[in-house]
Amino acid sequence: MTMQEAIRERHSVRKYLDKPIPTEIAAQLQQRLKENNHASGLCLTLVTGRSDGLGAMAKLISKHVNNYIILAGPDTPELDEKLGYWGADAMLFAQTLGLNSWWVGGMFSAKGSEKHLACTGLRVNGVIALGYGVTQGLPHKSKTAADISSYDGTAPQWFQDGVSSLLLAPTALNKQAYRVYGKGNKVVLICDSGHFAGIDLGIGKYHFEAGAGKNNFEWVRYL
Picture (tube, rainbow, N blue to C red):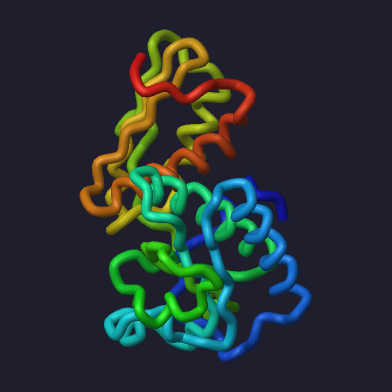
């Protein structure tokens, strides 16, 4: 499965089979996280056989969440966006390995997950639950490309593909609070989803890049 296929096929799953992740699958995911951490300066960490990264409410609405990725890094102004971007890569890579996932934003346990981190002085802002889903999940209700995007002139195919991929991105409370603007090869992405805006912005940028192709455009702050 390619990453583009994973974007189309991944849906949020909260209930899992009581089945461990095989050693070889966990090793591939660990390697991906190691590479991502090296590139980003984050400390994304895989925890297997434990559920302590979930808060009480999350445990009530889920089943057999025994594996998760900790989203953590140095507490800088850009941390949340970086966690969203690199967490999206890890989540979609897990999908290519046959794993289902659930991005746990407001219902994770920082205290439960922090003890598994190799470094101190980091901020945790969420976990990604992983496992083999009882089902493959369902698509969320989606806005349209016209709802979230505009392009100055006729939108090129890469821009359209980027928006299509962005519409499949998981967001806090399924708000899809994105606005994406394009002109020439310049693109601006804005996300206004409150407390989760940074995380959602990072997830959105990853999805747009995956659809549009990073070499076809450049991110800018203003057009």
